[in-house]
Amino acid sequence: MVLRWVNTLRRRMPLGWKQLKHDRTRLLAAIAGIAFADILIFMQLGFQDALYKANTQYPRRLNADVVLLSAQANNLNQLFTFPRRRLYQALDVPGVVAADPLYVGSVKWRNPQTREKTSILALGFNPDRPAFDLPEANAQLDVIKLPDTVLFDRASRGDYQETIATVEAGSSAPIEVDRHTIRVEGLFALGASFNDDGAVMGSEQTFLRLFPRRSAGAVSLGTLQVDPGYDVATVAAALNDYLPDDVVAMTDAEYVAFELNYIQTRSAIGFVFGLGTMMGFVVGVVIVYQVLSTDVNAHLAEYATFKAMGYRQRYLLGVVLEEALLLSAIGFVPSVGIALGLYTLTQAATALPIAMPIGRVVVVFVLTVIMCSVSGGIATRRLQSADPADIF
Image (cartoon, rainbow, N blue to C red):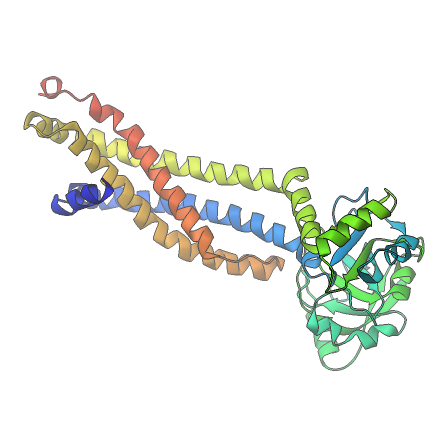
């Protein structure tokens, strides 16, 4: 059926294309409108995906088979704490070979270049037991064994060129944190998140100096290693059965899904960008409808002539549908290039991990085809009611 329709299009005169290029000004306006709608959709989907990735990048890099967290935790920025003794109790469960604490908190520090205060994610752990799968950071963990020394995320959002240059030159860079001075002794690269402009990693002792009201017995997360001979999911289930109800054990994949689910269902990110995508689609439908409707009205006499000559209604509708599909293809091409440029600018300005996967290109193209087809279907209503006797 589809192959027969394609072969029919190949044999017929490309009347839709000839009508489109007849009025080049209208054609350019239609292409610009479709490209604008597609760019809007690309940006909404790109921002949404970037924020999802940015807010789960540390959970995805945890060096853990099983993650232990408070039963009240919502996400990485609202973890709450649980007693450190739960980690020792976890070691009683068969299969658990190591259980280490991870301390997490957001702290205000003063940018040494701009002197402005900004929010930074602070991470504290035992330097002898890497908490994250970050080779660049793990190769420098010896330096943070000293008090008040940290590793700084060079991909943080903001102006830190001088600090980064100082550390890369082999010197330490002092930074003020709530009337307390710490030294940046090393760098790693990961990126900013929605809540924090960057991150620092230090020892447990350095973390507790930054958060004097926190105690070593109040842990944010527990990173557990499981013996390779045991099934991780089975061990996690055994931990949930054995430990008190104030903590929850999850596999590393379950914890990432937990973080992502919070962002998607309990924050405004999904709704806001979903609404923006829908608005882009509606804008595209309206623009293409205006173009096709104007074209149909401008050539109504010609269409009536075709009817009087015996052409079927299906042929005339095919002409309008041809115009819609051509507009979707032509308008989509420049939108991809412009969106790629905007992605690059956005990444440079915000340090968010925004990229263009091929799957998104396919999705937006399909939406564009649907958008133009819907517009074409609406625009043909006037054509269906056209009567040659009324026109002539």
